Length: 71
Image (cartoon, rainbow, N blue to C red; front, side):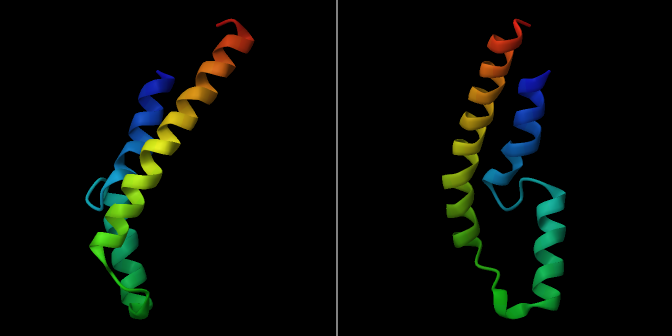
């Protein structure tokens, strides 16, 4: 169950269209601060760099917690 929560919460950050929340957030930011840009390439590169790293870190933390608690 914990692994599913990690995948569902962190996985969508991999791409721009990964989640509705990301699409809505980017739309609102662009409406009120158009100078922030809406470069899809930058967003995708950041997602490709950060999403796998956070999934690995969260999985390692989950594994360590399960080992420590004996569950």
